[in-house]
View 1 (cartoon, one colour):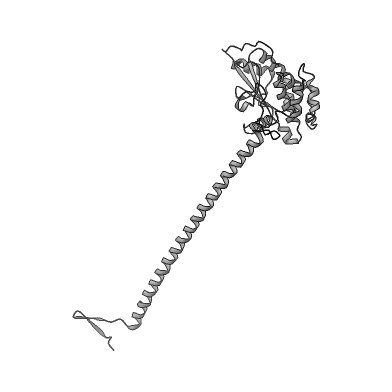
View 2: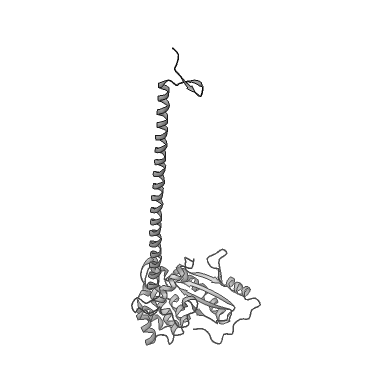
Length: 294
């Protein structure tokens, strides 16, 4: 049996069997449906991406706001802790003659000395006591001959590590002695009488006042009130915070003209300290010292 033929512009071509035509039609419909479904899926994916992007933007904004708020909170907290006295609400009271950034340095020696010895120390720190017992005569000699000026930064590291308030109270008392022009002498007395690290004896203000009697003319009503009232406590706390931000993490920390020289190999000795100062001061005139610093 021959297949039906259809005329096509004067010619004839074989007409496809009905089954074949049906298969083509089904494939076409399937193709169109697949294309629509693919388009719908693509649009759904794009919508989902847009929703995720909006969510991330909003979340990022929230995180940024919270981050800014946290930073502001830290700054405000730091200012509250270190810039004002918690008892009086007044600005931190620096001792008389304090110098440097935020007036956190107690200077000893001629201000125009050619070299500067920087000392970070804690009055409860046994390593600081060991340093002072070994180097105090040399440091005083270099100060009194105009070779160096010493800059003291008072730290309360032991209070933070062991608890108590001896580091804070002793540092405040030393700052009170600075007000009286007798910091160096009282500083040395505190180290000469430093208690065991575990014994927070300097927390007792009467102990600090009794030790002040070893410095002629220091224990006055003004000094006594300064010690008892913790006049410089906030200043001491601010000094300790500055130490925490300095990059140093131990006491004593000793610098000569900004370079760390202690706790290294070879070990620093009084003679090597003199040699370092002499080398640093080569070609420079020593300062004129008119009186031995108190």
